[in-house]
Length: 141
Image (cartoon, rainbow, N blue to C red; front, side):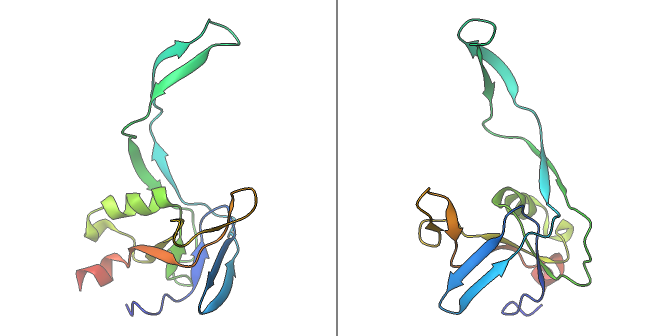
């Protein structure tokens, strides 16, 4: 795979991705399909407060236990690259290279160096994507 050309990309997040860089601006709408990672429910370890409405449950979440990647159906012949959440990208990275998808996996770079935020603190755009996997075929070359 030519790593400088990502081909057609599908956004498997629920949000529009806006990329603003020296190359211009690109808006990648959500596809309506979302990639997710199964996660075990954290263990309830206690509560704060009295029982009833004012009781706050306390759960252990560190380290989280993630399961399989839940890929939605999409045309893998038409799309050679996907944009996913960081959690999905990290799950792909944890896979042995031979088990990674045959498409490239990208995540919006939400670091302070890349993300532009609106007046409410929400990310309005990023300046780049981060690659989490080029594909199992390219990484074996």
